[in-house]
Image (cartoon, rainbow, N blue to C red; front, side, top):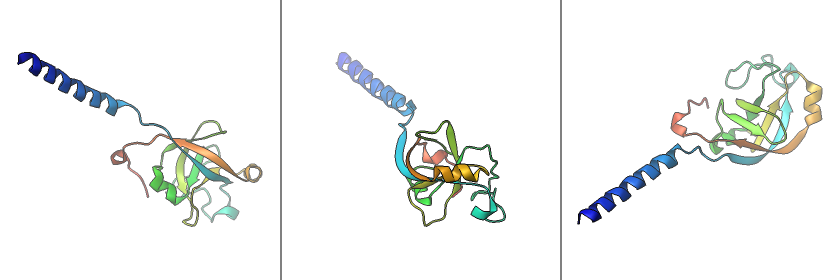
Length: 141
């Protein structure tokens, strides 16, 4: 009888530890194909506050920033999140959001280099991000 209790206790302890370790694993990276265009902080593309993003951040030409269509907020992307874009170096930060008419789309910020943005045009890209526990997000919507 004691052997059975010891075995059951050991099994329960192993299950608890297994659950704890699985909770410590980092979440899998998510990926999504989106349409990507480029934008600049110039008055012709925005308004008189061309370097102010939708959430109020001041954009500077050397920043790696993207704007996301609002539907991507429901896909696990949020303000301040780091995103990688296949084919481009580094990480981009979600600091801007687009008008409501766009879906499954990002805009890559290219400072004041309008020629570079035009050269980029519009293309399909895959973006990648690591989801986080939504209770830990202090998101601006």
